[in-house]
Length: 389
Image 1: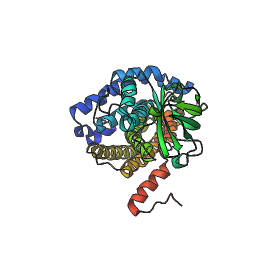
Image 2: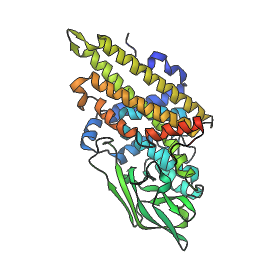
Image 3: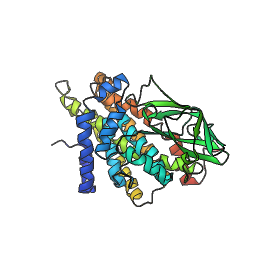
């Protein structure tokens, strides 16, 4: 009998019953709610983010790996499995959940005051409030230390000026966690998007992550009370800690895109007949499938090891970088190969492959480019930071 890719190594045996139950709950939600709609959303460049956030809040997906404040408090592995199933639906869906839980909610949970946590986290966990995370700027992506957004003191208040680019959830967010230069170094601020001077402009004409809200944020004399600052975060350690959380979700999520592509290609090859037999029976096609399945399962094992370290509070940034650059690149290679298996049909939205392939072109770049994560691992191996002059 044919086996599905993850069944080759019996990877389910490495999961607890609770972890399998969480994974299956997310998979069932994606199958019932997302798959029937996602091709149309992608083609139209829309995502009903507010509606989906409430639905996913009801099943406990938002901030699920955080403790208290209405969050589910699951282990890291369960969160990773959820990200895999979400991204098997679409990268945009996983991005919504990742930005909400691992960036905006995590920043408030980890670095915020008790007042900030009580005000925002319960509503965000329920999907009643949506968050975004303002770090990247148009001219400062890989080098966030150069950001130009600035917050100055004015009496007891802060006045924020500047802009942020490529911000997921920006146009549907109720609250933005914004990082800015100050006279005291880089600090984080909790900014309600209803604050005068805050503006979000959605970015259109994307060819990847079309089923995702991506925005440019601008701040024109946005006045904030002293209580808006995240008291626990000072310097780049604050935002970079949040990014490690989000990257962990990507390590797992991209495996969902790759699995969906591979399963679609295997199913297609079993029914596509050329030269009087299914193309799945040709040696070159089977070699492709064997190599892709091995790469996919290797990525799963790498992600599992990182999750084990994370649950033991022993994971290091370079380990997450290794997982991100390896799995994102492997997933993109799988998507491209699957596209070739489907031939001309591979470029249509009748199949999920080209949609995943386009999304993965963006995922390889965001939350740290492939090159930057490679250099993080290179520095860990050599002790020499090659990205600095």
